[in-house]
Length: 301
Image 1 (spheres, helix red, strand yellow):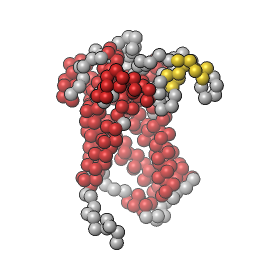
Image 2 (cartoon, rainbow, N blue to C red; image 1 turned 90 degrees about the vertical axis):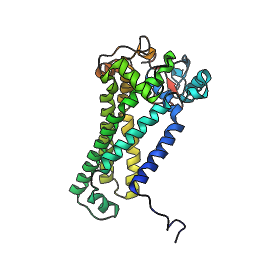
Image 3 (tube, rainbow, N blue to C red; image 1 turned 120 degrees about the horizontal axis):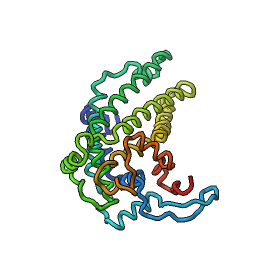
Image 4 (cartoon, rainbow, N blue to C red; image 1 turned 180 degrees about the horizontal axis):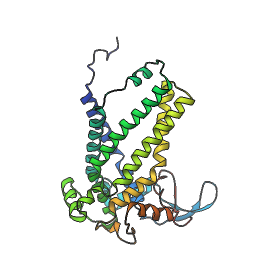
């Protein structure tokens, strides 16, 4: 017997609490990176680009990577400054995770998944049905999570955007919700919801479709399935990234913040208008490559 054989197993509620706690801690630790990335998605570049060359030797105007960007924020606002809006983001995360688990745990488990995990033979029709059930289950959970948590998401993005104009309208959770209602009314709670919801649903559809194809035509081993699932999750998130840029821009658009005013941001009539404008300026992917180098695509289109 191992040392942990007699340890009591966690019940489902405890497992959910443990997962949410660990993910919230990770979100807090990496929040400065998310903060900088959000400002980049909003189009804010506080450091002027400098001339250089790309990895292929082509002339490019370079922009700071995420570490330089966050360092610039820290130099101006100090250590507390790089955690601006973290309370709102954590509340959004917890609310969304709870909603997701409530939605998905209320659905009955699949007998087909048990057979697959146990290595039993299943028909191709059963496999297709299982992947479809898993997609619908995840889509329903993510949809509920996004809708319920979105007002906090809008407040969090606007709180981050205050860095641009040094406002202090958004701060506490309830104070931010009141300010959001005062500035944008009830519809303000759902600013940018459609592209964010589309991003999540499309990401799940791409992820499940590609994973199904690989596990069907490449390998059906459990270990390979886990690897395929992880890799295809990264591919899916990359494909839907522009929708998240549009969503965050729409979260700020129409507010009284300096970040939403010209020349920091154009006035958008809808998220489709925002998409078209950013696509025309080659800005739909801004913030997608942040770790090592970034180029000013507004100069080199």
